[in-house]
Length: 295
Image (cartoon, rainbow, N blue to C red):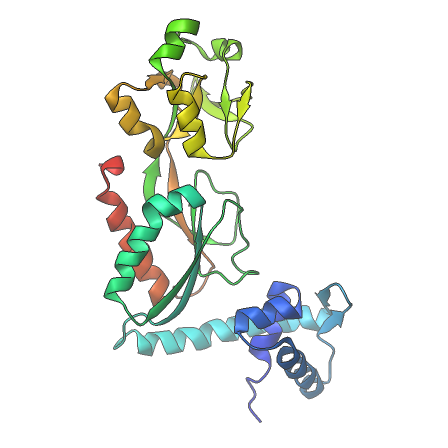
């Protein structure tokens, strides 16, 4: 009898919250996962999971067993990685996610370049503006923009990120240029995905709720509306730096620009980072540093 049998299935169900997602993560059938956990419970002579038609939850014994299993599996995986790192390039499947526009423009080309150096690696990229649950949905890596909330995930800064308040010269000629934050309320604001714009004043963060007659959850669409003179916009640097250089947009209230946030590579906590993840993160850092937007 293999004493490891059932541990991977149990941890996957506990972390994913149901048998189907656990099976998808492990790339087996849900019936296989169910059988393995039943056998594990029989060996332990203890119930680990409460099962209903809608959800799965841990028993008291399950909570105790889960923590030990996770540590065992981390040590097991680290042992394999320590040996495989000595003589092999990254292989296997790497699942990652990124915001749609940033991913298409910056991340996917760099991942493709990385893949050309490691042809035995498989990559699945999901571009989504939702904040996906990396552990429950089985992702190895996420690229996230802005400020990160509290999390058990590991975060590595891969590039800077600055937000600019801008408007087209034609709009400013017609409606005037704001010189203070208090004047923003009198202007038409082009609203994107965020209900609040952030600034700083007297060393403190100053949130502002924009109001206007135009809204879209696409940064490219916001940029187009701003270039047409519809109103003020607040967008990340990579959208507006070139239009500002050309004179098609004017940067406003630069003294109140919020402190730089960042572009982050985020991945689940492990005692040892997976080689395919750590190598790709380093490749993204180097690749982004060569982009004209970050020079």
